[in-house]
Amino acid sequence: MKIYVVEDEVPMRSELMVLLKKYGYTCESSDDFEHITDSIIKAEPALVLVDINLPFQDGFVICREIRRRSDVPIIVLTSRNTDFDELLSLNIGADDFISKPYNAQVLLARIQRILKRTYDVAPGFSSSRSESRNQACTIFHKGLTVNLFKATMSCNDMEVELTKNELGILRLLVLNKGNVIPRDAIIDELWQSEEFIDENTLNVNIVRLRKKLAEIGLEDYLETKRGLGYRV
Picture 1: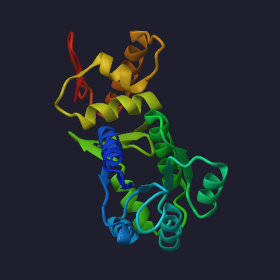
Picture 2: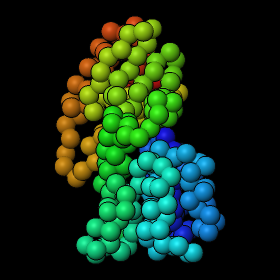
Picture 3: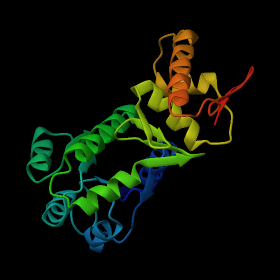
Picture 4: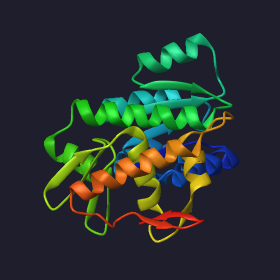
């Protein structure tokens, strides 16, 4: 899914885009802040991240103009953290407000929540736009189709639902298809915290995921590399 980043500080913009791409999103941005709204509408992103302090026009103006022309979700991501800034952002059409410095995992969680909510409700979008979004949140590999919003996987007209952890494991493996992903890397990806995670927790999720893959005819889809990790 594409996220449009409206940020004039180049280091911050680069940091954001690296983070988002790491988690499977595509990103677009522009330095032409005078015509930034036109660029956003033309790009047809799934979500927009916008700062408030920008050249030519501030983020409030951009939010108003985007909302006048599109229902695309907007998150205001800014160093301005007063109640007034947050209230104004939400009142002019932003879907969420996050202050800098941001916590990367909180930002990613809020992006995921808004995208899922928008997909499920899809207010104001035509069926063709909804279909486009559905296609944008779908990944494919070796006959397997994974819908990230519906949390399902399918093959040969058979579909099963996935838990959050099963979806996270499968998403990580498919996005890195052909590469062996170490067990520690999967644990760090799914349970990012300082607390100790028993490796048996991962084993249970892998077993359940394998069982569901077998249900749709993909018994040998998930490969174990002894002493290394997993790959698809």
